[in-house]
Length: 157
Length: 359
Image 1 (tube, rainbow over the protein chains, first blue to last red):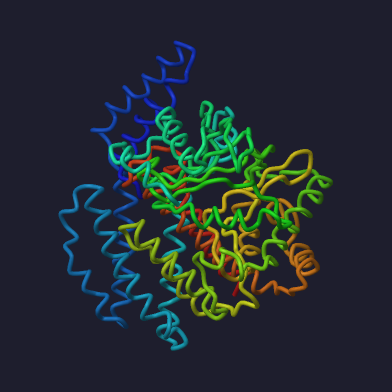
Image 2 (spheres, rainbow over the protein chains, first blue to last red):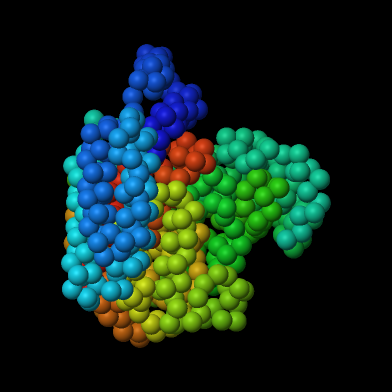
């Protein structure tokens, strides 16, 4: 998820308040909907995005950038960033962003030269990294409920 | 459009508030009165929940047009500044729909528009309410949306309308003034550049997978056989039908001039068919190509369709970043936008798969 968790929870609460609760006719159901807000208000200060997968991702990106730097030295500048002291998910997300920027810059160099054997191997490794990153994300991404959302239908997801 | 008479009133109005239906109704009545120079009666607005982008209201209106009384059910479409593709302009959609009114493309009749955001707080246009239901691409089990009879019946009209759109002679109409690319060698590259610029606007973080896709798309950009009006979002979900008859093609906000095969590629996106083997739940790729060629007289290769399918998947992925951004940074609380953000990994893998298929 690339939405800050705090904003996500605020948005859910705002939607419940303005778009859902005013249209719930059953008083028990309305009370339960307010209960969702109550819980979200209390959950919000206690949670952040999971750090472990982010830390793994940052480590994988650093390894890739180190490999890239052997052929595209300027990409390696980001490796000077300290790896210690990343104490929050936000720290890890910031590190991931800097690494992604370096990888993006490197793609612009590697792609046009991928017919050269070394650059070709690097292009394959970059593609594999990007695939693996998304495949890992897909393991925790649930099938979208677009059919139910679009039809306003019920379901237990 | 002449809206100066209204400006004094609306300079004090708030930003677009889709829940403030009485304020919208009053401002719209003032606007239509100024346009027609005659009294107008705008009935209560009821908001439709369709669409991810523009806000849609239905209402009954009575007005005088060229000395004659008119009374009809109308639609107000407003492009909120917080919407996915905001800031919007109503002009391209309005003049395209007006130009197509007498064509074989089923479109709602349009009446008025304005891009002056001081009127409603958002660009808007008014068109006829067209009867019909909009079949959607997402089914509960991911399977077919139609039985075979309905699939072929609706699919035939779906391709016919697309062929008619692409065959429309736009050159001597006001549509010639809308955005687009007229250089057949630049259509694809300019689209890739435009959507990468959107990505940069909508995502603070770089997205290497899409940067790689953009490099791939630029390198393989085909030369267009012709320049047509392209709908930009031509698919199941964006038309209305009644009893197996398509009554209107909707959602023209991405209309532009470009390579018509772009629309054919968009029809083929994985996102519009689930597990169905049929593009937009209608036809397999080969049949779609053959039907289109028979109607237009223009042969299209599966390779070009695959390229534009890859481009379309890339474009849809960028749109997901737009949806995420309008929730995360623009204060739009529609949870469907956040939900699209959650599906970005799925979209990026679809981009990768579409590129592999087109390679």
